[in-house]
Image (cartoon, rainbow, N blue to C red; front, side, top):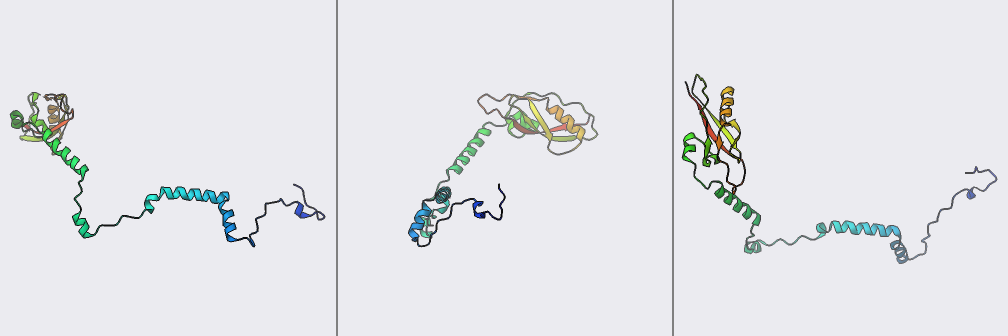
Length: 197
């Protein structure tokens, strides 16, 4: 860039910018026509249209609410989703307990869905010396193949007796689930009694 000297005209060093159009004496309609044809106005108009299309649902007027008399005369609406849920639940309850509990399981004190499942293997209880007769109630889960997966005491007691009762319960084997039934874990509760010896 050149340095200006006192003898030079400073206007020669200033870059030329386009001068804005003078609007004196131009009619309002002519000004609006020029404005609407400008690139900036077109971009603003496009963005406004996009915004209005996105918000169209919010700008629609709400439907008129019925009067109390009209509302009373409307037919009741059916909640089909709720009907499906209720039908599914009532069907699953009927399928869940189609059989009666087995007599042997009732004598052992087994409750829950496992009361309907046949016991294939039940080893004798382990010989344990206890000072007081104790009963530990276990909640246990059986896999579809009939093996006991896990067991936990429903009420806390002696930790060593709980551990022995859980080990004993894990040795039990139940009949596998038939192939036409859902292959899911089933649960049950059983009291394990430790007697004086």
